[in-house]
Image 1 (tube, helix red, strand yellow):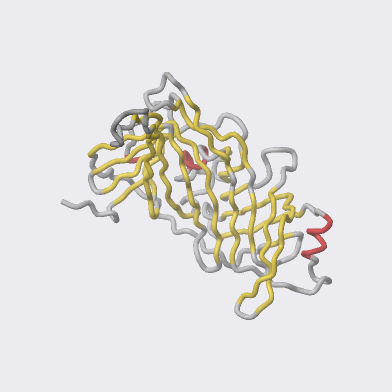
Image 2 (cartoon, helix red, strand yellow):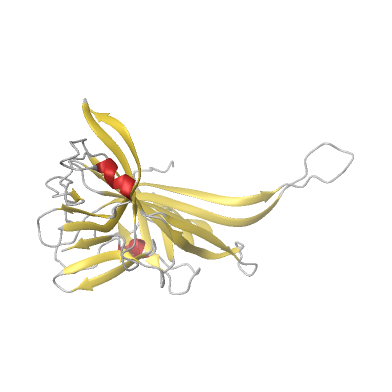
Length: 307
């Protein structure tokens, strides 16, 4: 029987031992969109001098794999609970701070970033990567829920027949990006979309002791950026080009939602413009702006607080 791609699930679990696969269970699964699996095996071609021009068989070496998926930016039924995406977010270099009955806050981390096992189930088959860490971006478009786009790189991959799991999905509906009280440099810019790229640099760790040739994946650096498209206004209202010219570092803030446990506040204390270009939006003059999210004291260039 053919496999139905719609009958898919994604699960993520923090590994007790880095690079040793965890068994994924119901509680590891969350709502995900458009999951994909990309296996990789290095093929070493052999072309020694010989009488025949016919090709010789290759030798296959190091293995790795990627699993990508999207997920909604959404809170929980009560403030202070860990997000359903908690393990995935932590493996993308986010620290998690929980305050009971109050908040769950996610912010950059530079150490103690866990590795994870990531599985993509499709209608009776499971593709899995291990020793994985990832990067992600967040897309906010007016009128739509915020969407995380995850990209996990793993030190090895496996394939096996496995039944779909039976999770309890988060019943909370995601807030939409409107009524967001968005400001940059204290100015309530009129924008249609914001995209934050968390900019993690992922590196495979070669290891001759590992069956795949890789021990795990680590995050070796990050360069978080923000892109948005404000309407152009008079300099007296907001001097976008002047702030670019001066290298100003400006605060950004936006809020989604209004129900306790599902109010999401995104902040960046020091946005520094890196490029600005002209664009039009339905005949209105606008800018395409890319900014670097700079550190304040360190590991604080952005935060996502759910209250």
